[in-house]
Image (cartoon, rainbow, N blue to C red):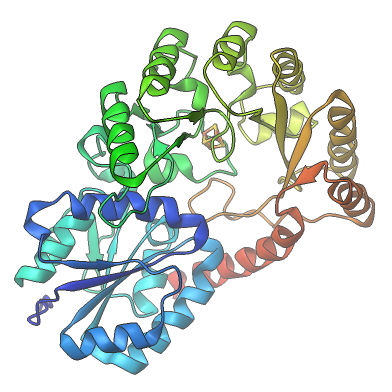
Length: 430
Ligand code: SF4
């Protein structure tokens, strides 16, 4: 028999790792925009204290929502276990984020009541409304629970139109970058974006962007805007090639918003694919943006490794993008992934050496170690491992502040993910 919560909750706490705070902002925005949820008390403290939940459950059943990154899963499972021990059925624990879509069974067996698979803007408000009104949440497309027999994949669910939802939560003043593009037609095997948001590219319209920027200036004193995109220079098109006119319209209109002093585009946390970087586009960008850097995804010094990771660009295109960025007056920040599946020791060392060449040209490096992310095509691959020489080379660049990024911590995280993936595979087979 399906379980329907009879004690209708009126408050929700959001729990997020700093790295998923931006997606939480958009989700809270979708709750704030839903007129059926005006009675809902929403809280998203930077640090979630059990005492705060205790106080809330004394007043009634409370929802706790987690956005779960795969690298944080163990910590979240432990927290859910403690929460359940302390509050029993007085908390309804709901989850979303990449790990909920990729490993729903693991989350449900660790104590979550309901999960939102795939994009959350439509399903989360529906789920919360169902809980508040005593309806069956499992009727909501994309929501699963322990009673769900067939778990959908994100690609089975309707896609979200970004224009229908706020990009952030102005009510709670949780304001971050505006996601302008979602979905990616490239299917790089180390990346879980195509699994989570699909290969069909959608963009937030210029009107929607300027509307929310204007509101953010008025209500939150926003003076700087920045944007989220899997490939910033793909704005306006179908994702396979740039659409410079549409991109320029976005930048021109965004920079016209009164009260906005600076617009950042194509820099972290967004990235650009090398083959989208052309001289006219970067010169146009230079005329509008405040960022001094552009983030370019090169990933390897080896065409063979790039090809086996399904990157669909060459090293030569990466080097050309770096040169064009420098000529246009940007500091190229170049992403590299070390230890990609199938990379030989020589290719690993060549990638580390290439970083020195790029730094000598004027670039800064952003280093990663390959992590087998659940939901990516490489999820069953062994973790990236550095050797003494590559660690020495990257360590030296980091000490000189020519390389940033969590490559060092990611070596351990990658090992943890690898064992977590094998445990998960084992438990699905039982
Ligand atoms: S790494 Fe970038 S280009 Fe490749 S699939 Fe992911 S988002 Fe798309």
